View 1 (cartoon, rainbow, N blue to C red):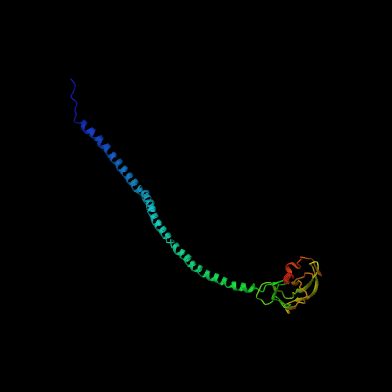
View 2: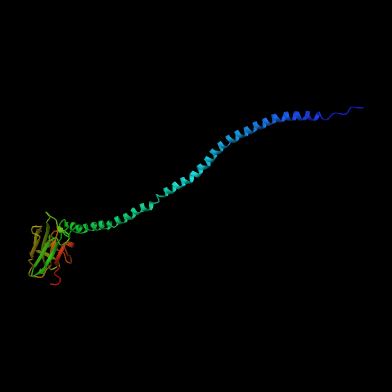
Length: 231
């Protein structure tokens, strides 16, 4: 018969190695705990800079608040108010235009009617009356085409006697020059006993000795005349 196994001594032996194992395991657990503690200590450090980075974006809104001061230049509208001040400067501008209007009277004085014209213009101031005709060059300053200083105008009168063929021959004539010192001339036309044509002329036209029937001489140079048809 086999002997019965003694179980009592086995139990304490098993318990002993377990206790021995628990002791190093406890030490290992303590070391791991310390390691975790170190990690926990070092871990929050980077987390704090991350929190600082988050705080940096929170600082950005204040920068946007500083942007609102940049909106303070919105007083650009007040800078527009100087444009309103420029509108008053526009108001004086009409005053300048009024001063510009002042030269207009000066312009009238600069271009007075007495503008001088070469050879001037001669007017008949007294029509034929009993053989008398008066003419005058323009030197009074009242009209245009005034006689220029140093200029003179040739004027003459001529009378004709009728011929049997209906023409005429020169009877009398006289020439004179008008200038600023003697601008007028009172003519005394000498006419034939019989009715005939006569002419008062200014300019350089020649005086024909004979006139053909139906011909009226001197063109536009005539100032005053009679053809003798109504004698």
